[in-house]
Structure formats: C-alpha cells, structure tokens
Amino acid sequence: MIKHLTRRATVALVVAAAAMSPAAYPAVADTATPLNGLFALTPGSCAEGRATGSYFRMILPAGDASGPYLANGDSTCSDNTVTLLAPGTDGGLKSGEYQPQPASAFDGNGNAVSGSITQPVKFYGVGFATASNQTDPQTGQGTATPQITVSGDKLGGDLSAFGVTWNNQVFNQGAPKPGGALPGKTTPVTGTYDRNSGAFILEWTSQIVGGPFNDFTGLWHLVGKVGGGAGGAVAAPPPPPAPGAPPPPADAPPAVAAPGAPAPGQVVVQAGQQYVSPPPLSAGQQLIALPVDDNPRTVTPPWVIALLVFVAIGGGILFVVGERIFSRGR
Image (cartoon, rainbow, N blue to C red; front, side, top):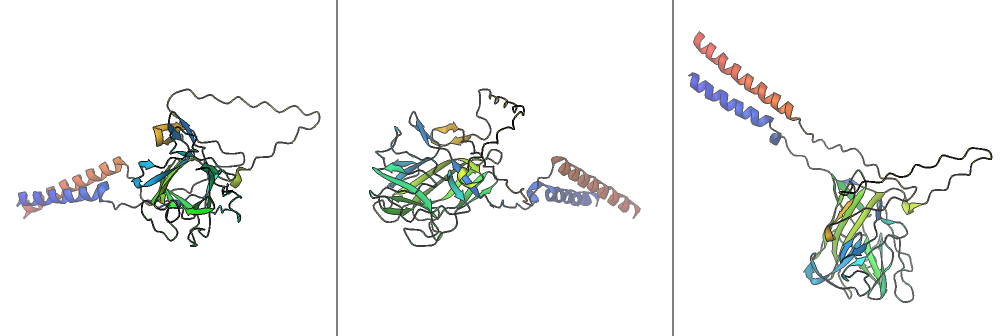
C-alpha cells in the first residue's frame, strides 16, 4: 500500500515540477511597433572592391539575391554591379509619410529630378531617383503609407509606395507591391535596429514588372541612423554676448575613443563585413523615443523556479508521510 502511495506521490511531484517549468508558460509573440521618422542614410562607398553604406544592385532575371547582377557602367565602384546611394534633400527615407516625386519628374533628357530620399545617380548614362507616392505612378494603384516597424532589434514594414524614376519611365520598387503581393523575387522588408544608438540596416528586393527591365529585380541595402525632425534643419547660431559680458567658456575637446573593436551602435554591413559608423544626426534632429515594451511576456528569475520546485518536493514528502501515518492509524 505504501509503495503504491509513494508511486502516486512521485507522479504528482513530476507533474507539479513540469507545470512550474518555464517551458510550460505559453509563448507570447513579439508585436511590431511603428517606428516613424527619418531614417537618415549613410552614403555608400567602396574600398578594395567592398561596398559599405547604402547601395543598390540589379539582379538578372535568372539570378537571386546572391547574383549575378547587372553591371552599371556609371558605377564608381571597382565592382560596377554596385550603384552607390547618397541621402537626398530630406536626408533619407521617412517612415510614416510619403516623399512624392514632383509633378515634372524628369528633365529634358529623361534624367530623374526627384531627390528627397536619395540623390539622383547615373544608371546607364541617365539619372535615376527614388520617391514614395500615395498613388503608384506605374500601376495607378493606391499604396500604403511608408511604414517601418520594429520588434526587438528586428525591422520590417511596408514600402509599397517606394518607386524609381529613370529615362522618362517609372518602376515600382516597393515591398510588398501595391495591393500587398510579393511577385517573383520580391521579398519583405527586413533589417536590424540598435535601440541605443539608432543605427539601422534595411534590405529588400523588388522584382520589376513591365518595361525594359521586366523580370529584373532591384536589391536595396540602406544603412544609417534613425532620427527625428524632417529635413535635418540646421540650428540657428546663438546670439552674440552683450557688451561687457565675459566670453562664454570654450567647449571641452571631444574625447578620443581608444582603438579596438567597433563601438556599440556601429553598423555591421553585410557586403564585405566591414564596420561603418552611421552619420551623426543633423543639428535639430533627435533620436526617436520608442515606447516602452509592454509585451506581457516576462522572464521568471531562476531562484523563483527553484523555490517553487523545493516547495513542491516538500509538499510531496509531507503527503507521503501523512499517508503512512494515516495507514498505520487504520
């Protein structure tokens, strides 16, 4: 009889311990939070055939994200499949609002004149530029407001409004496409984000539908720092001191970081695996203050789990002893 009760108590202990283990708690998925504001771009650069910063590549119809790519004779890189990008008049890509192309999007030679997101850059002798439009110029469909989201340190979002103007033509280069589809080699927006420094990497691919580059796919790699105010306005200089007032104290010299590993917040660029420091924010800009993570999932301290297991074991022992006493009394 006692052996049978002991077996029952052991089973009860095992069940209690399993119920108190962290694995027993249901997992709660992280929720994506909108991250609105300016994604200030780090200009692209090339050194020893390695691209860093922000750049664009065109994947051949038979290729994938690893290539082969279409060469651009106007590229300034030794690897001429890389077209470097530089921030436009807004300083980069805005999340939470459109950056539309002007009504007259081309000059007399077909060069794109949009320049708010990225500066126009030559592609096969003709300038191309980027914009985000409420109505997609290529398809005539409405688009979602450009939106980058963050979950932990991962970025996602909807850039269906993102497009390119080139040689009197327009090409949607968003992800997803207007309407939410991901045709062909189009992939969702992905990336990483450092909440402390604001450093980010954004990447996506978007297959071209129609036109001279039908079935070619654009690969976009944007690097930089998330900042506040639009346009990066420069702060006004301080007023001159009043007559007879003592001069203001000189600013202390900036601290010099010791050489060594990259500082936290530096962006690790996949192409070439080099470290690139994102540009400082313009005067007047501020890092976006993210809402506090209100995810209901919590981490149970190890000592709490140990205490609960100890209590369960003690309760099991008392149960067995009590059963024995009760049996003897009968």
